[in-house]
Length: 264
Image (cartoon, rainbow, N blue to C red; front, side, top):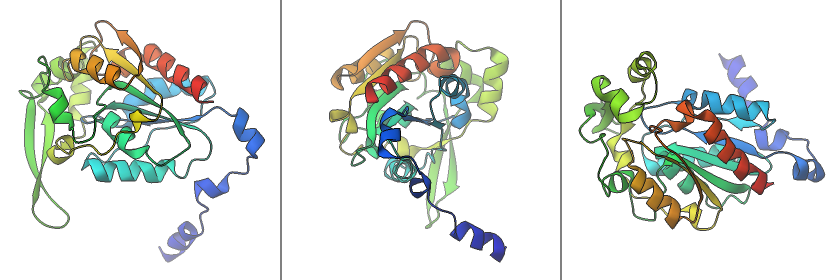
C-alpha cells in the first residue's frame, strides 16, 4: 500500500505533463468536458462522447458529485484546471448550473453548451427555475431518502420513482432502457438542487443551448427563457425528452461541435 501511495505522489499533474508547444495548442481541437446532471451518471454521455471522439475531439466526462452546487462546481473547476488548451464545457440538466459556476476565472473555457440544462442567474436555483413554468413531472415523481452527512446531521437525497422514471425523464427511449436507467440512477441531494447559483459564467462566455421540445423534467418554456436570457445560440429538437443527448445524440453533438469550432 505504501508503495502504491508513493507512486501516486510522484504522478505529474495533467496540466504539467503536456509537452505541446503554444503553436500546437493553437491548432488543436478544444477539449470537450461533458458534465452529467441529477439522476444520471457520466455514461449518459456515451453516445455523444463516441461521436466527438470519432470527429477527433479530446473528451472527458467526469463524475458530478451531486452533493451541493458550490462543492460540485469547485470539484469540476479543479478538474478543468488540469487540462491545457481551450475548453468547451457541456452540461445536461443540473450539470448546466455546475458548468456555469465552475467556468468563472478559467480563461481556457471558451464556450458553454447547455443541453436541456439549467442556466441559472445569480441567486437562482434549479428548483426555482423548474417551478417557474408549468409542465414538470419531477415534483410529483421524486422519492426522498435520508443520508448521513460527513460532518454530522442528515441530508436528503432525491430519486425519481422507478414507476414514473420513463414519463418524467426519458419518454422517447424504449421501456427496457429506461427501466435500467431507473435502477442505476444516481440521486442528487436536495440541497444541491435548491442551492442558489453564484455569478453565472454565461454572462461573459459565449453559450449554446439545445432545447428538448417535449421535456417533462425542465419545461421547454423554461429552457427557451434561459437560453434567450443567456444570449445563447439555440437549437431545438421537437418531441425530445429530457435526455435528448441519448435519444438524439447527433443533434447534441452538432451543437457541441459548432461551439467547439467557434472556440478554436
